Length: 137
Image 1 (cartoon, rainbow, N blue to C red):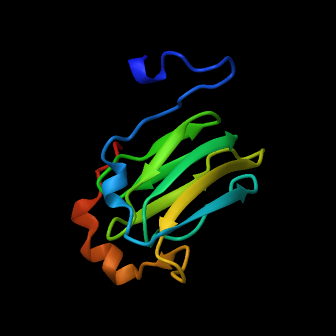
Image 2 (image 1 turned 90 degrees about the horizontal axis):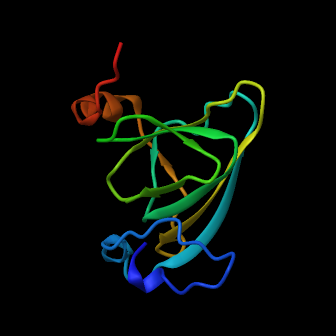
Image 3 (image 1 turned 30 degrees about the horizontal axis):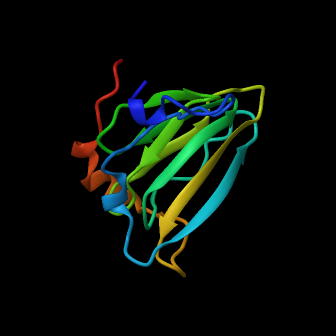
């Protein structure tokens, strides 16, 4: 544990610290807190982008999470996540459980009036396939 978090009161826990994350927040951004609830086995939103960085926390279940340039991974309740937003494609955020709901809460920092997400075309996804981390067979 770092010294800046050594004297927290009981019940307060720092889950993650991202030192360079503040540099990614667009000037004049607003903070949006968003809850995403996925029914059992739900594939989540199609590949998309966000207008700014996202910090989040899985509150229930398991999320199969994949960002462009990162290997897919399963995030379980209690795990934190970060997306840089901007040009990086969020490839998947699916419920990894076939028989239970999963949920996460995120805070997005984005310019006012921008959409929460913008879908990526199949053509663009194919053109950027080289940026995707190969999945083991």
